[in-house]
Amino acid sequence: MSQVSPRTDRIVRFSKIALVAIIFAVLPLVAESPLLRRLFFLIVVFAMFGLALNVVFGHTDQLYLFVGALAGVGGYTTAIAADALGVTPWITIPAGVALAGLIGGTVSYIAARRRFTVILIAVFTLTLELAFNQFVVGFNDLTGGSTGFRIADIGIESDLVFYYLVAAVFVGFMLLYDRLIHSRYGVAFNAIREDELAAESVGIEIVRYKTFAGVVAAMLIALTGILYGFYEGRLYPSIYSFNNIDVAILIMLTLGGLRTLLGPVVGATVIFAIEEQLADTPEWRIVIFGVLLIVLFLYFREGIVRKVGDFLEERDLDPATLVENNT
Amino acid sequence: MVDVSAIAEIGIVGLSTGMRLALLGAGITLVFGLGEVLNLSQGILAVLTAVIALEFAGGGELIGLALPVPVAALVALLGIGLFSLAVDRGLLSSVYQSDGDERILVGIFVTLGIALALEGLLDLRYSYRFSLPVDLPTFRPAGLVVLGGDLLNIALGGIILAALFLFLRRTYLGKATRTLTQNEVGAELCGVDTRKMRTLIFVLSALLAGAAGLLQVTATNISPSVGFGLTTNGLIVAIVGGVRDVRGTVIAGIGLGFVVTFSNYYIGSSVALIILFLTATVAIIFRQEDLA
Figure 1 (cartoon, rainbow over the protein chains, first blue to last red):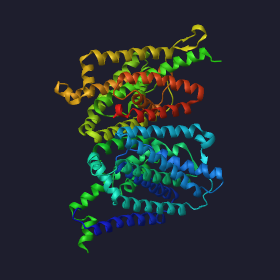
Figure 2 (tube, rainbow over the protein chains, first blue to last red; figure 1 turned 45 degrees about the vertical axis):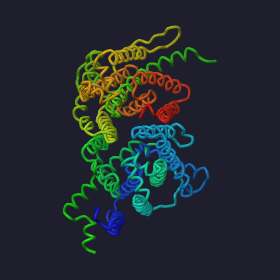
Figure 3 (tube, chains in turn orange, purple; figure 1 turned 180 degrees about the vertical axis):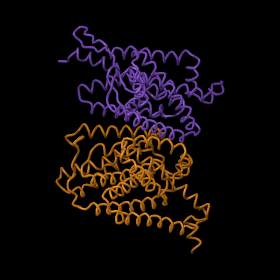
Figure 4 (cartoon, chains in turn brown, red; figure 1 turned 120 degrees about the horizontal axis):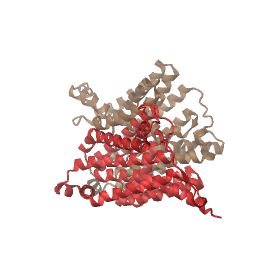
């Protein structure tokens, strides 16, 4: 990969995004069953969560174990504000996204300033998530508790139209992620990950970059959480729970490939395919997830995307080589 | 007017809860201090122990034995000891092969995986809340209502924690453990076998979790779905107590037991839990030097 020209590299990256965009545009046209379409929607949503977690966990080593809570802050803030103001929830999306961004930024700022180890930020964010869940359950006058909070009508009747809207946002996420990782921010993230002390000594402001990663990731997570909530129509604490969101995303991200553009969508596709096979025995879902976590983290930390990349490269079939040879 | 007898009654329940929290927290502290592995399966090990005891005490249908409860409890502890030995030899060996941040991450996810897999498996058969078939008397000293289960928790919990202290302070193995938490290289130079010590401590921490689980099913009840909650409670206790210091963990466990029980009684369980979680986040921010 190192000999590849920047131009080829860019072509390959955009081709990958275009390919994913085309696949997800065509899929619901080929498969018309509502069950499969729901599956495609969920794959897109979890790939979006995965891309966001990639930014903060993959690239800056901040293990956010409160993706569910950030998504919930987005969803509940948007729904409650819209309800209180009597407006469509589309207008209050920025409020949900901004609040989550503020929380992500504050957490990352504190963690970077106080030099939290990865274990501390993991436990810190996990306890925040548990507190958020209890808040939603306990303050049911505000949130509807476990009976749920109905989101006002979003004005889109067709699930298919909504799917395409979210898929378009997903493509936007991929473009943004790609741009971010190949900007000076991406360079700084790499430097910090390799050696924090060295990065600091050449003038990279660690606190600023980590906070920035936290804000971006939290905002993307919140937007995804809001769209997920719109789709469900009613918000429950269980939608945004640790088991439903965080565990699933960590598995998908690792399986697909941490710090890769396509890892989240590949991981989400495989996991939802497995879940589909388990549709008749949902009680085994959590067992399989547990076993997957163990096996993935012990033996498969590179992820599918990198494995496939290595495989193709060994045979001179990787996209970059093909582009170079044909231009 | 403050109801003194109510406060005394809640205080006893709080102390009983605190003992169990201390046992769970001490196990997490020991494993983390010794090998930088944050054991997220601690809570489900407590549930598993309770399930084994239930089966051997005639409360389940799998084994078909009805041993006296104390015997069933000992069998359960033996079972969890063997189980944790297998986990340590099988899965944790692979975790210890990596080091630094990598080991921490792998440790978190592997033990989380164990927790989820066990919770799912146990939930297939024991998805209800259960307790052990013990018939403990209720005491009524001076107009108070005190449950025998809570007194048993306080007494046995106190004995186990005292024994843990004696082990860590007075025995060679205990001292070796403490040396290792303070200085890994130094301990190895003194001839301490790090890997063996880690196995020993992991089994010990599983036994502590098992004891907490057994005490819980004599005082109240347990179910697989509370497993992860028990882990987070233990984790919070370990953090508030300072993750490398067992004495701090025990004090924090008992203290938080009071806080949770009283706020549970006076302001409701959700607010009580929110207080517990936020206490942990504040503790992390301000005690970060001790925890790193």
